[in-house]
Image 1 (cartoon, rainbow, N blue to C red):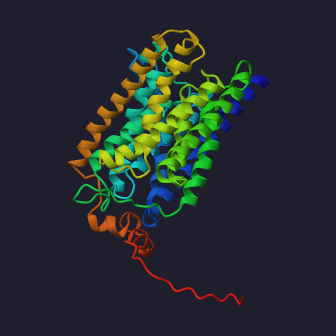
Image 2 (cartoon, one colour; image 1 turned 90 degrees about the horizontal axis):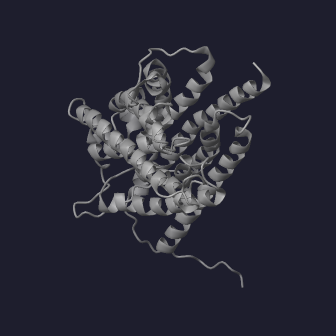
Image 3 (cartoon, rainbow, N blue to C red; image 1 turned 60 degrees about the vertical axis):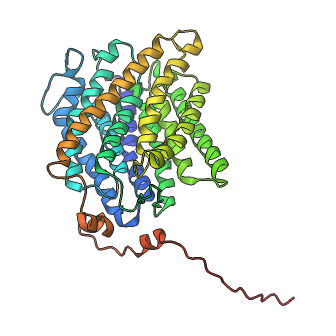
Length: 422
């Protein structure tokens, strides 16, 4: 094996490790945005996503995704994939698969039955995700043949995970106490914004492996492409965070940390599909647009549609992923509308993004509905109130901290003595 092949192999492995570490970021983000009495449950779901994704994707999913195509829609099944020269790609795609299903776990936090979630995660990583991935990334997949652009998974991972999360969230229903009988909405504050910020830092770092690692090489032409992707990823994240910050600051007269974090993630998601196809100015624009959209979408979903997505997973991943994929039709330096390429690429991007979203909706609805009416999706109310750490994992927890956070605040008058000797 010559030096360039060794470097390419090493690059894919390092990038895969960065994506692997994103699971830690998701764990901190989701735990920070939810109540302390559910922290262990959040952590368990995130690590189980890796268990299941690793084994199920190796046993079945990878071959369905990359096996010889059957009419451009699904790969030929080869159980327990072993190809010595392809193990690094298997690892890299496995951590992508785990990322996709982890998006779902955050949306349904604080009320989902653990056993049911594990079953859905298994089906999602084994069948639902790989089939859409085949359309996009297998050389003869039907979207690949249309020259659909999804370089690093804006559609394959984020649209898939985001829209599956939407369906699960709708079918499981809102958390206890989220909505009042008169239709008003209660805020259920997370217990640690520090956890959430640290989670976003880790995810942001991991995204360089997620996007730039998708070159699957570091030598040859990729030596020029990788730095561009890293720059585009960084710019889009910054633009998304700034726009979300400005919008919420204007609206609420305060700098809202939760929405700023979601805007940053939306910028990262938005540029993922086109990170190798746009210029830095295009990446900046995509991030800004996605930062604006996530600010609008999150509030609309929560307050107008009464859909209780605990971490705004659908808005961050589904909406930003969908929009980022479509915006390639405008900002791609080759065939983009703004670069004189006409509207054909835009049409292809829209067809691909909405087709994958529809697949995620239909496939997820069928499986989740079956699970709902057989073994059930959510824990009993008393378990939800006590916290899933206790009911699902036998961890004793004093929930007085959460009760204090959510209890109505009474106005009090405090007399302050003036001890200034002057």
